[in-house]
Length: 111
Image (tube, rainbow, N blue to C red; front, side, top):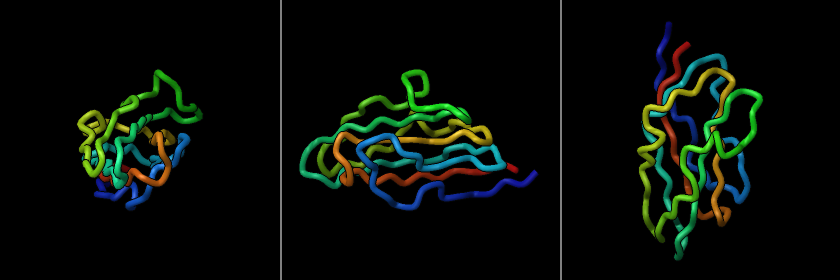
């Protein structure tokens, strides 16, 4: 068994529709840190899902639901810390306004 520290997402902006930002490939992953930073002048809502392999974004996959992040704020996502992502499962997210929320996510992969 190998445990690897990994940056799951390089700094990137969320889109306005659910998009995949990390997939656990041939490993089980655990999220240790995730931040969402609003670079806009107004509040923006964010939704984050952890989706089982072959699944789609839905209410029962929601971890963060329409969380409002104030202008210039950084949210540290305690809801995601410690979450396990089985092999083949993935993280999707979306923002109410595209290209205004920056996501950073890191953790470990166990193979």
